[in-house]
Every structure is written in C-alpha cells, then in structure tokens.
Image 1 (cartoon, rainbow, N blue to C red):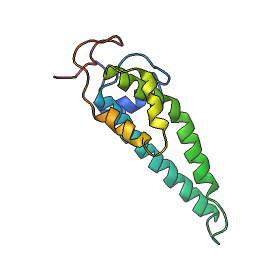
Image 2: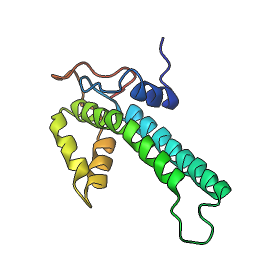
Image 3: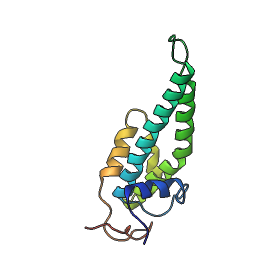
Length: 138
C-alpha cells in the first residue's frame, strides 16, 4: 500500500501528479503539499542567502542577492504547475469546477480563496470527478 504521509503527498505532487488536473485531492494532501512547499521555499532562500553572503554579494549594501533570487525563481517556476494542479483537484474534491482556481491569482484576495479551498471539507460521496479519496471519513 502506498504511503499517505505528508511528505509523500508533496513528493507525489511534484513527480507523478506534476500536471494531473483530473481526480480529487483531500485536505490532508493539500496541506501536506503546502507544508513541504513552504519548507522548500525557506531552504531555497536560506541556501541562496548563504551563497550570496559567502560570495560577498550583500556586503556594502549595493548588490542584490542574485543567487537567492535565482534559486527562489527556479523553485517557484518548478513547483507552479503542481500547485495549480493540486488546487484544481482540491476544487474537484469540493464538487466545484477547477476553473475557480483562477481566484487564487486575484491580487489581495487570492490567499483567502486558497485558504478557503483548503479548509472546506471533502464532498461526501462520489462526484463527477471521481470517488472519494482514500482515507476520508465522514
């Protein structure tokens, strides 16, 4: 049986479910992905800042932390599609259309839409996007 720990949800999201926009994702998968995405972001920033500091890029106050911005940009670029796919599957789990994921990109309120989508419980029973994800109790 496949592991359903929080790390495995993140790893599956960036590997096998990289651009999987079909099916459903339960809350645990959504929050597991968010947790490890945030940890990865902090690691990328930390490694980038360390590299910039060791190269002396931040001394003197005039230079930008190029390595940090580069790692940060690369990380966000590589994880953007898996995140959108996860939000679409999460919306499917709620019985909603995946097109509502566009709300997550609205300035100033996108974070609120993402939070609400992540907090609403799974729709009971099967819906047109598939059966209830394994491990969900009502």
